[in-house]
Amino acid sequence: MEMTNRSLHGDSKVDCVSCDGLINRNRGDSADVSVPLTLPGKRTAHMEGDDLYRLRDRKLLLEDKKRLCAWTLGTAVFGILLMIIHAEICPYVYTPGSNIALIINCSISLSTGCLLILIIAFHYKDIQLFIIDHNQVDWRIAMTSHRIIVITLELLVCVIHPVGSYWGVGLHVNSSSTVPTPSPLCVSSHHGETLMDMELLLSVLMFLRLYLVHRAILLHSKVLLSASYRSIGSLNNINFTFRFVLKVLMNKHPARMLLVFILFFWLTVSWMLTLCERQTKESTGHMDTALWLIAITFLTVGYGDVAPKTNCGKAVCLFTGVMGVACTAMLVAIVTEKLALNKGEKHVHFFMMDIQISKRIRHAAANVLRECWLLHRANVTKGNRGEHRKHQRCLLEAIRVFRHLRLKQRKLRDYVSEMVDLPKMQMIMCDLSANWNNSYRELEQRILSMEQKLDELSRCFQQTSDLLSQVVRHRNPEIR
Image (cartoon, rainbow, N blue to C red):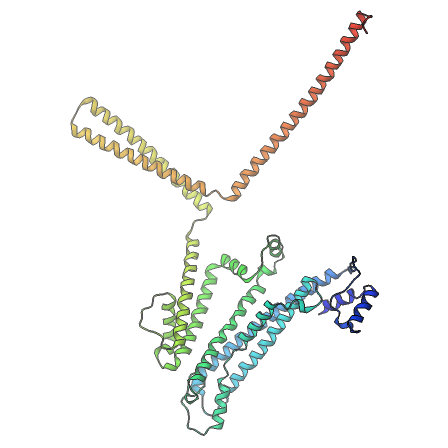
């Protein structure tokens, strides 16, 4: 808030009458003054160096946002890893009175608390950056309804984590029953299906914290950090959002981005399926079978040899199928782009095809002339009727081939003419405009020269008329 204090200090040098009136209206509490007031029609003096301070504070706030975003993502991933460890080791180390599950769950809760604090700090820095960008004083101006909804949703998403071990430990301490059967999520069978389903749902929903990945990619991308990108983007009204950054990355590294996403999605969803199917004691509760099921579902093959049993597993497979269709479309687009010829290759390829078709057209025209000559000779010599029909048939075939090749060449040239790109057309138009400008200048020069010659002619006519009048008056003095 250094910039805010500096702005308040600079804006406090206003007219005393306005300040006294404002303090009287606020019952003497000068801390409530958030927007500096001046006399009507006057502006406050701009302090020298304020813009430099703002730029410096803005740069520092951006660095703080990047740092907080990295810490937030790391804390979220750490909580997810703890949840995975919690779900994997609990069926094997669970015994009544054991505190391992409680310790791990407490660690998850502690990381969740740190995550919430980091998210609040991130949005606090974002509000400070908003104040500096818009040169405002009151921070409440930045608290719009959209921002409040976004912050609330982020806090609700990040607060989700499994809490079943707390109840489980309490029930074990207060009960004297026999040893319960180990369960997938450290929740014994006599606790009821509701607690197990809630523990499972909370564990799966922890993966929603991965929405922080898009924020980290945006803040750490070279597109956002490059001043040239920002300058040209501001001139073209481009918003540097995650969608724009993702398009840039997919354009530069399409295969790498898609491969990383597919591998991460495959492993994550496979583990989620094992978590959902573990309580059924089926083969889908094992990681190898889940990897196979997710793969064939992602590829939309569906052999039917393995199928999910629980509603959670069915929902995971349905989501996998939808993502598989989307990724398949992206993969087809990437492969098509990789196999397509570039502009230079297209020009070379179509140029060679045009040359080959031109050669074939010449050969076809020569065949037409040859068959015409042979048919004419057969008519002159009046030979066999079979030979005459043979030459007629060959002539019609040669004409058909010639027309087909001419049509093919016309289509090829039409397609090549459509390949003329906008820069080439722009260069042609620039050349034409330059020629027109030169012609216009030459025409202006000629018009000016003609005007000068006309002026000279008018002066000559005037001088001639004066000389004639003098000569006439000299010869006839009576004429005035």
